[in-house]
Image (cartoon, rainbow, N blue to C red):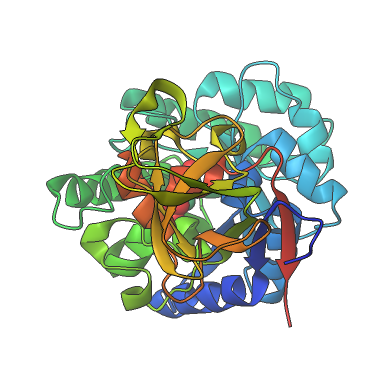
Length: 373
Ligand SMILES: *Cc1c(COP(=O)(O)O)cnc(C)c1O
C-alpha cells in the first residue's frame, strides 16, 4: 500500500471478470446483464462496466437514467437498461443516448413516448409479487395494449418484458414458484396483445445460481459478480466459486500502549481489561464502515484478526491489538480477498445487515484503485 494513502479499496477486475464467467456458466442459455447500479455496488461503475463488457456481458443494467448517462459519458456503447425513473425524468436524453428504458405503467409509457424525440427502445416491467416497481394486476394488460399501439404508431420498440423476485435468496420460498407462474401469465398476456417480446428476464444473482427455470433469455447479476454470496443459505462466496472483488485496507494512524481500565471511544462502551495496545484505523461510518459493527467487527492485522473496540466513529475506529508489536503506518485489512481477512459478509453479520449494504456504502473518502493483470 502506498505510504501516502490512509485507506483504499482495491478493486480486482480479474476477479470480477472471473465471477461473471462463473455466473454466465450457470445460465448457459441466457445472455448476461452485469448490474452496475449504485456505482457498481461501491466498486466503481465505469471501470466495472468496461470489465464486464470484456468478460462478455452483453448487457449492463442500472437503476436510474443518470447512472445510464454516466456510463455513456464514460464511453460505454453497448446494450444498457435503466429501470427506475420518477415523473419528469429525462427520458429524451436517455433515449437519445441509446439507453433502453423501462415502463412500469401506462402513464410512464406515455411519458417516454411524449419525451423521446425518436423511437424509444422500451422494456415493460410487470410486478409479479415484489410489490415494488412494475405494472400490477390489470395495469399489466393495459400496459401491453398501450405498448402495442405505441409500437404500431412507430413511437416505441418493445424489446423486453421483465420482473424481479422477492425471495430468490430463499430458494424454497413458495413466492418463487408463484412469481414464475405470474410471469408466465404476464408473457402470455403480452403475446395476446400482439407483442412479440424478444427479451424476457426475471433472475437476479440468487436465481441465476439456483433457479434455471427463471433464467429465460437473460440473467441480471449484481451481488455475486462482486464476489459476495447473495445469502448465507446459498453458501459462502468461495463455495459458489466466487472471489471477493473488493479489498478494503488502511494504515494505522496511531498506535499506543494503554493501562488496564482505559475506556475507549464515545460513550466509553469498552474498557481495556488489561494493559494493551490500541491501533487507530482511519476509517469510520463517514466512509461507510457500519456503526452497527461497533464492538463486533474485526480487522486483519499482522498478528491475525483483532477486534474493533468501542464505538465506530465518523472518521475512525479503534482496534485492540493486544500485546502484539505494532507501529504507526502498519497495514490492516478491513475486508476482502486476503487470507484470513474478514469478508463483507462477516461485517454484515457483525452489524445486522447484508453484504450488499457493506460494499455499497463504502465511499466518501476512500480511494478506489482498480487492478487488473
Ligand atoms: C439490483 C438488481 C438486480 C441485481 O440483484 P443481485 O441480487 O445483486 O444480483 C437485478 N435486477 C434488478 C431489477 C435490480 O434492481
